[in-house]
Length: 284
Image (tube, rainbow, N blue to C red; front, side):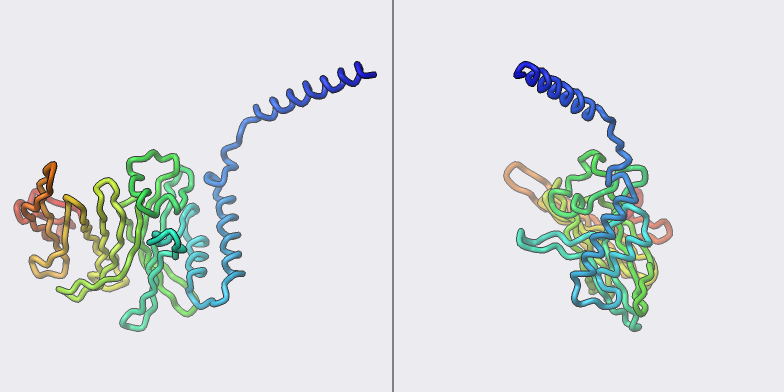
């Protein structure tokens, strides 16, 4: 009897091992992964949205939940709103939105969003925000390629409408953004701040509302680091902001600020030209 039991137990173990081995050899259907499936990704996003709705106690027209829902329903699959970077480990990241009442009484919302590159896996917003993510340009595209945009929404009653989208020429390291005033012309602009780990500093993408809030903004980049700097300037007294590119000499024991070169915007060719030579140009 014991011999029969031993034989049966041995057969069960062999059968189980074969079954387990067969299970491991089943091919994986990568199309079912969330990062590759618009349907699964959307279901997760809408589930999280409904949870936010159920937990919210202070709703108002065009609030944060409304903006998130509008983006999910009206933007391409793989598009996500961004959050501000945490200033401390105890912070709870807040959605990157700015509510703005215009002079004519219109209500607008500036928002930071990131869009996945078509044909690649969907991005994750957490891979775009923060200092560590500023090295993303040195990385591969295993986590997807994010395209970041500054978007302006208009709030009419309880309805949202997209006014414009402005691409941000960076893929990662988002920190914060804010509304500022350029004092020489009393001009409002949106300053979008990114960490720049490669150069130990920060980059600002400044979107100037040159022709009013409803028209596409004008982009000018400034930055500040140990041995690099670009600062805003009003050089030729037109409506476009200009800048100074600062020149540094780096030595083993010190960094010296040597000089600066002025750049003026030429609207005819949409380029910044150096006052030291028109062949030296920059796009923004």
